Amino acid sequence: MNVNVLVFGQIADITGKESLSITGVASTDELVQLLQQKYSGLKELKYLVAVNKKIIQQSTELKDNDTVALLPPFSGG
Amino acid sequence: MENNVTYNRYSRQIMLKELGIAGQEKLSVAKVLVIGAGGLGCPALQYLAAAGVGSIGIVDFDVVELSNLQRQTLFNVEDIGKSKSITAAEKLKRFNPDIQFHAHDLKLDSRNALGLFREYDMVLDGTDNFTTRYLVNDACVLLDKPLVYGAVLRFEGQVGVFNLSCRHEGYKTNYRDLFPVPPSPDTVSSCSEAGVLGVLPGVIGTMQAAEVIKIITGIGEPLCNKILSYNVRNNMFYEFNISLAAGKSDEYPKSEAAFMEFDYDWFCGHGRNPLEISVPEFEESRKSEVLNVIDVREEGELPQIIEFTFIQIPLSRFDISTVQPLILEKLIVLCQSGKRSLKATKMIKEKFPNSEVFSLKGGVEEWMKYRTRQHNESKPLPEYERDEETRRIC
Image 1 (cartoon, chains in turn brown, purple):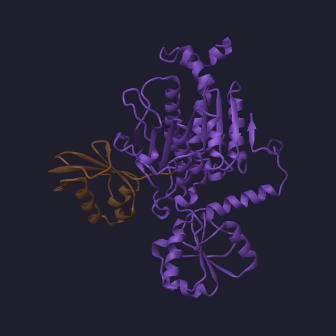
Image 2 (cartoon, rainbow over the protein chains, first blue to last red; image 1 turned 30 degrees about the horizontal axis):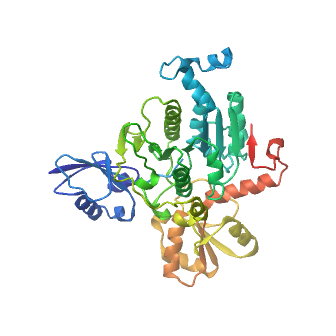
Image 3 (spheres, each protein chain N blue to C red; image 1 turned 90 degrees about the horizontal axis):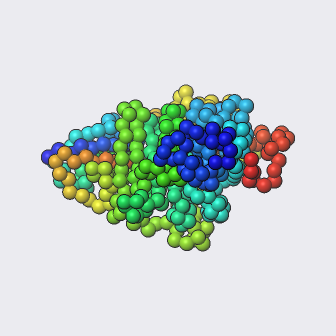
C-alpha cells in the first residue's frame, strides 16, 4: 500500500522535499510515527494532518493512494 | 447610485450582473477592519478602497521601515519612520475620497479589541505574529464576526474564512479548530527570520480582499471552513477542509470578561522570561554597565550593527567553550528577532548556571524600531501626528 504525503512550510525544509511516497503504514498515527523516526526535527513541530484534503483530529485508517498533507501554522504577514 | 461620477468609478464591476448596482450599494455601506498595514494589509487595503468599501479601519502601531518596502507597496521612502496606519489612511483617502478611513494607531490587545471590532461588519487579519492572530480570532468568535485570514512565510501562503457559515454547510469554524493552541515561539519563524518573497503577500492579501468583496456582495463561494494554501515556487494550490467534527475547539475564552482577562502574550509563550532582557532595559544597561554582547546571526545577515561592539558567533556553529571568557561580565545574546538568541542563551545557562546571561527580546529588529521611535520622539511631530486621540478619521 502506498500513501502520498504532501508537506508544507518548514516541514518541507526538514524533509528536503515537498512530497514523499510512503509504503507500509495503515493509519495516520503510524505514518506520523514513521516520519518522526526518519526526520527527528518533526517531533518538536506543531502541524495539522489532512487525509484527502479533510483535516482530521484522530488517527485515521489509510487506504492505497490516499494523500496525507501536513500543514504547520504560519504567522507572517 | 448617488451620481454619474460614482457610477463611472465603479462601472467595470457594476456591469457584472452578479454584482450590479445592488452589490455596489452593499459595498458602499460595508465596514471592514484591516488588522496590520503590512505585506498582506497593503494590497488588501488598496483593493478594498478601489472596490468602494464604504468604511475601512486600519489597525497598526508600527512605523514604516526601509525593509518593509520590498512588499508593502503603499509606502515609499519618504514615509520611513511614520505611522503605518495614519500614512496608509492618508494615501488611500487621496486614492478614493468617497470613502471613510479610520486610522487606529494602537497596539491591539484584549482590552481594546472588542470595542473596536464592534464598529465593523468583518475583520481582515494581516498580522505578523501568533499573539495577535489568536486574539483577533477569539474576538471574532465572541462577537460572531466573519474573519478573513491570511498568512505567509518564505514562498508559501494561506488564506481562509472563519466564523462564516456557507449556505450548504450550516456550521462555522475558526483558527482554533486548526491549531487549538499556538506553537512554541522557538519552533516557528517569522518573515524577518525566514524571509518572504515580496510578491507573495501581494497575492495572498489580494485574495483576502477578494474574499471580503465576495462575502459583502454574496458573489460565489467564500472559503468558509477551508484553508487554501498557495506555493509560489511550483504554483500549487491545495485546499484543506475543516469538518464539523474538527470544529469543536474549546480553548477560547467564552465570555467578554474572560477574553479581557486573557493574557495572549503569555498564552503564545511571550510572557516575561527570566532569560530575556527587553530593548529599553538593554539600552539602559549599555549606558551603565560593562557588557559583553554576542550576535548569533549568520555572517552577512542585515542590518549590521555599528552602534556598539559585539562578538559574532553564528548559531549554526555555536561552540559553548568559546563563550566561557565572555561570562565574566554580564552577557547579552542577540539575533534578528530574539528566537535564536534565546536558544543560545538557554545553552549557555545550562552549561554555566551562575552566569548572568540574557537574550535580547525582539532582537535587532525590535532594537532598530526602538531607536527609530526614540529618534522620532526627539524631533517635533508633523501636524497630522499631533492628534491626542490615537484614532483619526480621514
